[in-house]
Every structure is written in C-alpha cells, then in structure tokens.
Image (cartoon, rainbow, N blue to C red; front, side, top):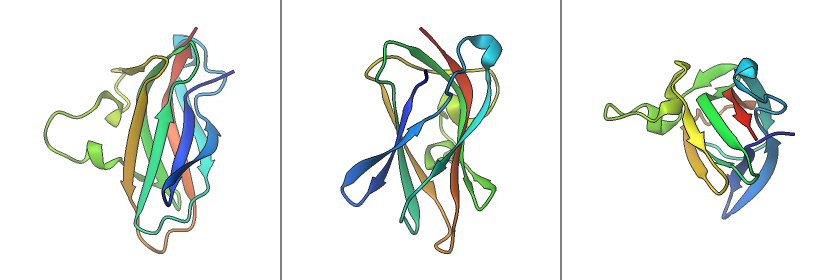
Amino acid sequence: AACPYVDVLEGDRWVRQGEILRYQVGPTQDRWQRLGISTEASHTVHIRLSEEKDEVTHLDSVHLLVDEHPVLPVSCQQADSLPDYCEPDSVYEIMERGDIIELAFEVPPSSETFTLEAKGYYTH
C-alpha cells in the first residue's frame, strides 16, 4: 500500500513507526502526509526512511512537526548542496528498493509531540 517505512532511533535500535506516503500512487497523488512519531529523544530525533518494496519513492520534501512547528532535518540547514527533499519544489529525492535516508532533527528538550510530514508519491 505504501512506502517508505519510517523508523526512529531509540537508544541503539531502530523502532518501526509505520509508513509515509501511504496510497499516494503516481504523480497525481503528490501531496503532504503526516505520521505521528513516538520517541523518548530529548535533543535530537533520528528518523530513518527505508524503501523496502519494489517501488520507487519520489520524495519532494520532509520535515518534523515539533509541537506543530516545522523543523527541517539538519542536512537541510547547511549552506552547501542541499538534498532534494529539503523544500517542496517538485525536485524529488528518488528512493528505490534498498535505499535508506537517515535524518536528524534538533528539537527543544521540552518538546511533547512529534509528527513526520512528507510530500511526494511512489510508483510500482
């Protein structure tokens, strides 16, 4: 039904949270989707996106809503060449089976709610 899978790093192991871009098959389904994240992280939230199916994910943009405020991945806050998933501009990060993207988000220690928000679609 969807991909990629979403895992969060808890201590030294990855914990599956679900899938993002569910049922967004084809370019006409390119839109935002949210997935609630459960984590005990206090300063940095580490999230892994993994394409595990015979699909191709077209990831346009991804960020973490922290108490409903968007936080970009650390990789999107550097001045050098930015990954294609840093802004919703229809320039896609392509993920094929076996591809993994690891994201780190710096969050305030008093944060209470975390929601991954991604824009894109996938094809078979």
